[in-house]
Image (tube, rainbow, N blue to C red; front, side):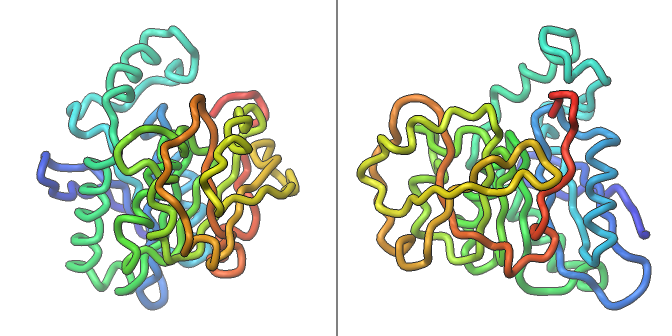
Length: 261
């Protein structure tokens, strides 16, 4: 496995990015691995390596780079009200979708400039928890570039945020998958009456406790998606299933069994 840490230039500074890919064979299809709120840590490096082993060039950026280099937190970042958790939340609560879309564009530029590292063409994007809406927003913002998108237990898929995924569903052209945490409040979805794209179906838990339900939509429904205001409260959006297109998503990822992200 080839691994490197590269500072990808953006309009707001250097974005430290962990890149891993198979050592042998032709350049691999690229996947953007967007972190959850606790930030870059060894657990995410291992997940990126695991994805790379099945034939992908994986880019794992530190999306907190705008707050400086000191944005990798200790193990107690996962413990609510700890010092590291509090420090992380100061950065996390300032995150919005549009700047992250600029970061995605910067990663496209790096990929285009490094055809020996990754195969040119379509890009896949994973978004975990905090980054679930970023993955879906990227698919809507860059429909000609994103070939597959997945939101795993994403937060605030339906919100009043600029570029909220539910507002731009009709722009997504790729195969897309969205799963919800078992503790997510899905109650707002039935009240989203002006959206004609949503359908709900049960999904197997398989190896993950985070996938009790999927929200799916057909291509024909997506074409008629509305841009009505989101309902009050929190919830998840809707998307097409991409299981048949993007092999790493055929099986849900392993998740922790101790209730931590």
